[in-house]
Length: 275
Image 1 (cartoon, rainbow, N blue to C red):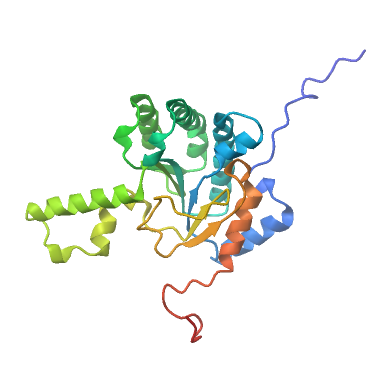
Image 2 (image 1 turned 90 degrees about the vertical axis):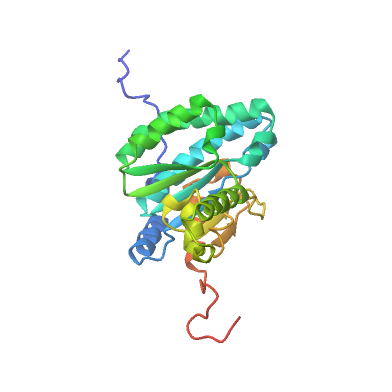
């Protein structure tokens, strides 16, 4: 009997990023990117992990774990097609109301993700940013998060924002409080408070701009307290695909749909006299 070659049964590693897409889809994305038609900043409400798991007869934590694979797939594709920023709604302020076991599972997965992806973030020159009431996170989570933030602080190719213990209303409230404090100290006049002043106080200010496209997976059609100020003129995409199944092809479809939108920002497009 002949000996089996050492790599004959090597574990198959699925393609990811652009390599996971059909050739024609890759070509379309390359052309759209070269023409500057893709969004520069995409934000995603990653919804449907628990419902996806229940339909499969599994624990909700299984859905969250599968969702982490979608984060990897979408982040890699975003980087490869030249997006400047990707912002993910990872854990909301309201998520603290969930059962403690699920909260622990979510935060544990976050630690796993940060520990496992730090090398990928370094190789891809991705800068990690985190936004929200971060002091509310457990110490173990904050320690791993701070390590990853520091390790990627000088990266410039793409920004990956994780919204953790985040709420859009809470963000606006803290911005108003900071501005009120500056007024009380005589550092700022009330009439100097404009949109730029407010935006500078938002948690997400380091992203450098609002999202062009906001995607919510799993069929729900609401913002759920996510980027309320920043999304005033974002294109909204509500897709039925649950987050654990939202991989490269689904992301590519949402990006292509964005390029067919007519973004007028309250004005008119092409001289047309339409509303």
